[in-house]
Length: 487
Image (cartoon, rainbow, N blue to C red):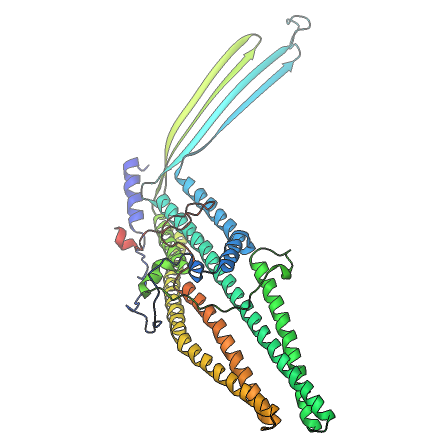
């Protein structure tokens, strides 16, 4: 029979033969600066509430309402609560386990022989209580690794929650600016309809007097019908945009007429200065990928340490009391034991699980690299787009002004009989196209600014996640490390 000391030595030797596994270091080669920069940077103001930089009361109110009442936000919040409960459950593995038990019984019996007193009975009352406990001694740190993995999983869920909030704020702003763009286009379309109606009425009057051909009058009436159809299309688009905004804000039962959308297109605020390296701390999706990598690293430790022996302490105690025919008896019993478990027969299975954990960890490394690359791509493209919006919008504003001037001159010339209908319609179409392009560019510039704030990691407090009232405290992931770093 193997002695306890020899068994301990053999257990340590078996654990020491665990495969040496490690994850690759993430390749995070970010440039020092973005290639494209907006021509003018704003002040270095915090962007955790970037919508306030627009100085737009309606935008701020809709975003705050969406963050409070949206179904997506509430669903993400309860996923976070679930993740915290799972983390707390994992942490309890380091605590002792045990249970109390108790029993009480009474037994009555008839006389067993003629020597008993007439009418007497045998009654036995018994009471008992038991307690058992077990505790695994985390000698090699396996349970600590389980706790680290649970903390990292919870942190990933927390960053996912903030990513949903970040996306919701951007979606609300985008929907509002699109709705305002529809409102501006609707005003333009109504103005175009008014012009087309005036021209058609003038043509009909001229046709009655024999001053224009029937074909020219028909063309103007066709333009009037087309302009009316465009008004109806934009009215439906604006109504649907309002409904989308109300749904985002959690106001499903509100009528669309209750949401007032002004026909306005404000100048977006400048983007604060930023560097690519800031994405590692500012983007919640990158932070979530980092936390999942930390969880995979801890799970790799769990799999490696599962090959080591496990030491447990267990104890139990019981006490019982019986009373029979007036005679009391009390007895107690307790025990304390130490246990050692060696994963001998399960070793092949545990090694296979370890290799699977290593593969999942390598995938987490790649996923983290991909998250960083996607974040840089989004930010670089967003900044380049914002940088080009200003000059492009200046050109379109100038083009619309010149086209409007040319159309007004053509209308005067047509009214004076100095030009034909074809020239007037061409000038009108040129002006309409320029006006539509300018309105669309202004709307797109606002949406691109929102995209830039989101791509740079705005929309949440990256320095202190989860500190808002009503939210659970969120752990900060520890710096990225590998098994070699912890040796």
